[in-house]
Image (cartoon, rainbow, N blue to C red; front, top):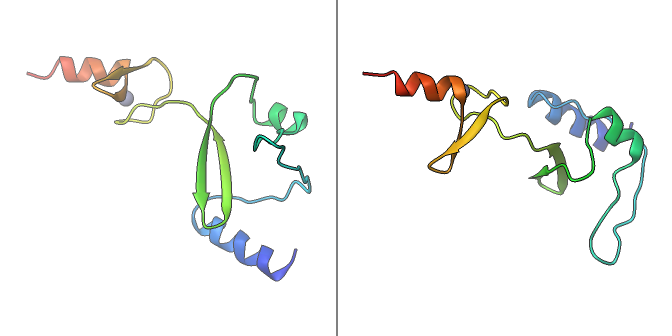
Amino acid sequence: MTNNGKIIHLLAFERGIRVKSTGIVRKVDDLGRIVLPRELRKVLDISERDSLEIFVDGSYIMLQKYEPSCIFCGEAENVSVHKGKNICANCLAELKNKP
Ligand SMILES: [Zn+2]
């Protein structure tokens, strides 16, 4: 690991992100696309047509499988949209039962 790599690793560690180089280099095509390696998709459970959320930190681009979650508790199961916000069935029931 280079010095620069060590610094990146430390910064990511402070933020709870564990950065690991895959050693894979891919070219961006004429339309700005890159192909995610099959092995990586398999490990991260990314299927065709799945959505990925894009995060940026300086010159770094991070991708994460997009799974809408409840804004109150973070639950990803049984999530619906209410007034443009994601809410799970449990939190929705809680709100409905408030006097
Ligand atoms: Zn919830």
